Image (cartoon, rainbow, N blue to C red; front, top):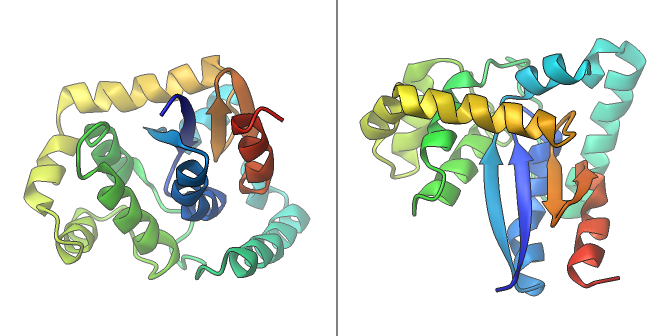
Length: 196
């Protein structure tokens, strides 16, 4: 595989969840690698001077309807998390620990599902442990990894590096140096892979 799609995300973003639901198949049909880069969306917002859509009530209401349209188009469940906004520091540290690990995609799927399919309060370590165990993963191992200082530093660096590259929200995707923002830009990602 010569080409690569880099996916910068936070599981707290419903738009990132929707993009994730499509990206593995998109990459497979275009013979491209999918590189997963976890980041802290709150940190990106703060550093980029951006605000979440819900900070503007009319925009937040519209976005909820629009996300529902995309979930229907993609034929995936989307259940708004009643605990939203959820502090995703713990799950994102787990995903930073998992970068390059053979269980990385399983962890991403389990945590996205727990956020947007069967909504859970992922800020609670007991809840995260239960989610991981239910997915057949070793919860104690991954929770210990999340507490590692090198892992904490990696997530911080992922976030800072994203901002330096011009990232202002999630999901953000890169094909080479070309940046695409939002789950509604996947057609442009595919065109970039095809050289259109």
